[in-house]
Image (cartoon, rainbow, N blue to C red; front, side):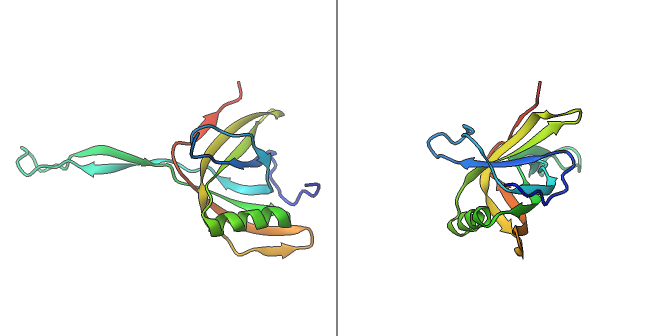
Length: 152
């Protein structure tokens, strides 16, 4: 992809890879995929399970930690037509795949920290076609525990 249509001043790179049910937590080899801006790495949220009993000695609710919802990765993307067609096919087939956000260190664009997760497309915004590609917003539903690797 030769044309830079984004304004990601930090040089964030977006990659995708094939998810396998046989090795669901293994990050596959990843391929650069489109360009992204306004990336919002999701915050996980632990649900609260009510553990209040009627025979307790006070009137305060009690809770226990439940399952963790890993959230939704959202971003605005600029894709060439082939990449967008792939996204559309993933959406229509309900394909699970890996996505990786490569975040450069503030002082050196060659050293990257990575946030990786597998999941599926939860939303694909209305595409805006331009001469050299397609712009749209993307919502990636994270499935399972995301993996963060800090550059060291």
